Structure formats: structure tokens, C-alpha cells
Length: 153
Image (tube, rainbow, N blue to C red):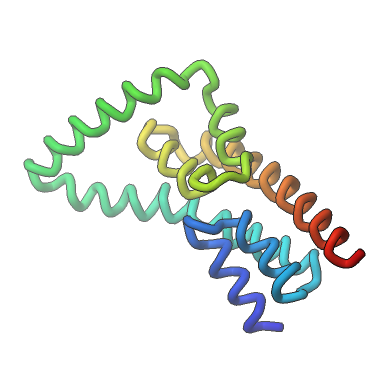
């Protein structure tokens, strides 16, 4: 069971699959207990938030020492923040919905990068990323259990 849960953990951590791939894989393909799969995939899918918010910040501080990168980054951030202004009316609730919709490229990884680029502190971002992950976990769980029920019948 350990090897199978490790596979689920890896899938949950990867930006391509996240919880929307890990949970169905663990329950439907690997036939693991539902609650173990939910717990492992939820925790491992939350880890990228901390990786993005802390490691990316550390890496960025290192790169900003070079003037050419500092100029590039300033221009990039200005453009990114101008693009985010269209979505400013939704605020952090929009990030939570964005993370909560279980579609490709709308998970914790992307939501965390959006928070980072928008300059939101991790303490303000975390509850909304967490809420989005709870929504996504609930929706994917419903789909997985429903699919499992239909497959067993």
C-alpha cells in the first residue's frame, strides 16, 4: 500500500494532475481506501503553495541582484499586474473559485503563482488557496465516488 500511496502523492504534487488526477487514480485504478487517498492527495497538493510562495521568493531575491534580470522582472510584473486588474473585482474569492474548479491548469500550482505575481502575502493567500483545494477535493471526490458506483453496478 505504501508504494501505491507514494504514486498518489506524486500525482497530487505534480502541476499537471494535482488532486483531479491523484484522487481518481488512487481510488479507481489502485483500489486504495478512499479516506487515505483523500488525505494523502490533499496534503501533497497543498505543498506547492508553500514551494511557490517561499522558494520562488527566495530564488527571485537571488536573481534580482543582477540588473538585467531586475529590469526584466519589473517590466514583467507590471504587465502581469495590469492583466490581473481585469479580475480584481473578484479578489481573493476569485482565486479560491479558480483553484476550486477541477479543470486543467486551474489548481493550487497556478493559483499560487497568480498570488505570487499579484504580490499577495502568503498569509492572505493561504485561506483562499486552501478553500479552493477543499472545493476541488469535494467535487473530484463526488465524481470519483459516482464513477466508482457506476463502474461497480
